[in-house]
Image 1 (cartoon, rainbow, N blue to C red):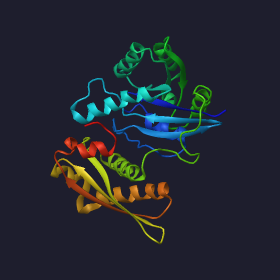
Image 2 (image 1 turned 90 degrees about the horizontal axis):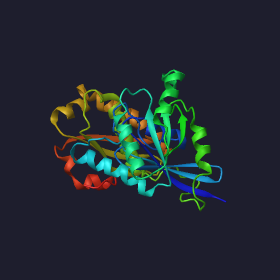
Image 3 (image 1 turned 180 degrees about the vertical axis):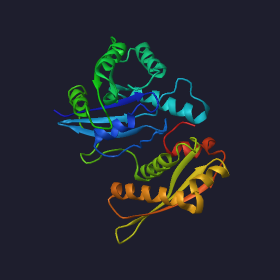
Length: 294
């Protein structure tokens, strides 16, 4: 009998949720960045484990005190995923010195009597004694299982798949066998470019940046032309993205093009434009484009 269900992956910002989802899926479906809170909307990753289809909801990181319209919308989006989920998995970065945000998440789950499993991430960076102490700290009546993992190295990934295989409800699969995500290619392309910007400029740029895929044209020779606009809030940020003599934007484009070619499995011609739009975070159209409430 086939099984299928939704698993919401929750956690504090930058706990490693997107890395875990990509590792479980076995392919890139969400961006990873050293900058916290880079996942801005719920992304579904699809995993097959025997006769079970696991549908992972990679949620934005949950702030205890979100600021501004965008952060508040992202946190509402993350908590809203609970109503769709058949199971909950909370990611915890073992190397953190402060677990206030994780404690707040777990307290809310207890309040609503929601059972969850925990994934203690980055176990390769801590001694065994500290890991055991953390496992004991987070144990509780609503914690059904604690996994020790390294999402980046792939340690513990198979154990998570095996655990959920028999826990999800019986029923038909919701996605075709070869589908890895519900994220449209245009949106994934924008996310990949945004990831490359963060990789190169996470020290210089705040979160005031947005990438939108505005053109997608397939050619008879099998290649595709992708046109994207990078929105920033100030002229100074535009200069940072462009770089001296346009070198930074060329490097971003080359790296994004390489990833996109692998994802779409065809030659990519990527054209990037940088536009100053001071109030982009108050534009309802941009929120709607990624499924966030304005």
